[in-house]
Length: 399
Ligand SMILES: NC(=O)c1ccc[n+]([C@@H]2O[C@H](COP(=O)([O-])OP(=O)(O)OC[C@H]3O[C@@H](n4cnc5c(N)ncnc54)[C@H](O)[C@@H]3O)[C@@H](O)[C@H]2O)c1
Ligand SMILES: O=C(O)CC[C@@H](O)C(=O)O
Image 1 (tube, rainbow, N blue to C red):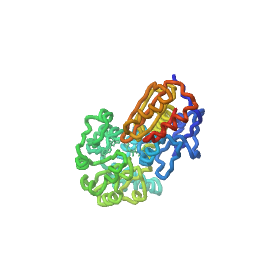
Image 2 (cartoon, protein in one colour):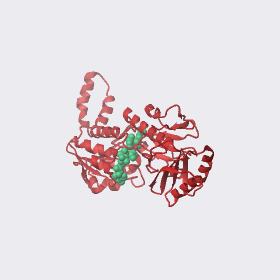
Image 3 (tube, helix red, strand yellow):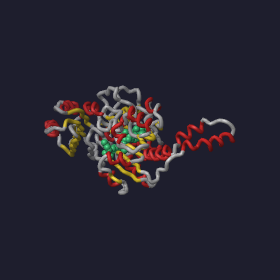
Image 4 (cartoon, helix red, strand yellow):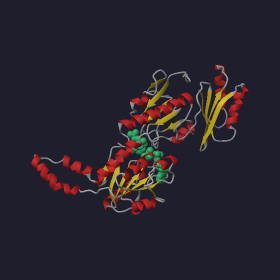
């Protein structure tokens, strides 16, 4: 087994509450969790909005213990050479369970019924009379035999779609970018809609599981509501920005949308009739919080110690077995000659290459080169300086 030598204690800053099992991945000999350090090596966060934050030059990685990364200024991180990670699928089961719970509970008017009954007062006999007289206002609908439209068949959407079949629902899914892995896991009984309009036209319930991006923002609006059945129930456990909330308020008032179940309450939602606001509980289970925190911490630790990358959203995935030899890890523009220029610096110092990997992602690329020879500590700063000076290098580490 290769022993990894860390020169100094690295600091990890956490934003939000990160499960202890995840933080324990960072052994105390080599890491300090220090939320006051202005120059941490890495940040681990959940939904904390980082758009207003400045990032120090020492920061190498940000890990989102969760799926959505719209709280992170990803483009700015890429410009500064900071790797951003997330934890795909680690909280999917938690969200799926709450989606299916809310689907049935809201269809049965359970949330309204519970608030009503909690406000009843009087003696037992009077309460039971009020219950029997009042319950007719909460008559609901069974989901069996109805059609659920699932927009986005990724980690969460695919689980929801498969399990809704077990509720005897018809399931229609729409995802033009579905991954091969998810397609394999999706039941053949899930009907794949060719257009989102087809899904809108047929669904009695619609649940959305896509990231918030420039393309998906406001995808629920008065034009798309017009394509839906009347009294459709919409479940949003993805992000509030997917919905034009002014249009949603109108659609709820007119009855076009029967219920809007959302994990993202705000002032608008709280004032909407028939909105069911849930306090962002989708991923809030012990299991999911631990899964996400452990996965995020392992990815960051591996990146800091070996340069290897898994589940980054702005760096390419790249992996080279770590043998303990001196490793050059460079994040750079995806343009010709970068690798040869780095190798040329190494060969000027008569350093032989043991292994290397070069991967690209959009405009950027990542190169790791293991040096076969013992490198004299004195030349490391010179090597670092010369490689950094190559045009197109964004960030560099000699690990
Ligand atoms: N409520 C919560 O606590 C909670 C927890 C986890 C995730 N989320 C949100 O849910 C989203 C989905 O999570 P996930 O883990 O399933 O992510 P995922 O990346 O596994 O799946 C997203 C899917 O959406 C698809 N997609 C993208 N654009 C689309 C479009 N225009 N139309 C249809 N499909 C489209 C992608 O192809 C992908 O398959 C996250 O981005 C996050 O915002 C919320
Ligand atoms: O951390 C949470 O509780 C929510 C996470 C969720 O919104 C996500 O995108 O993964």
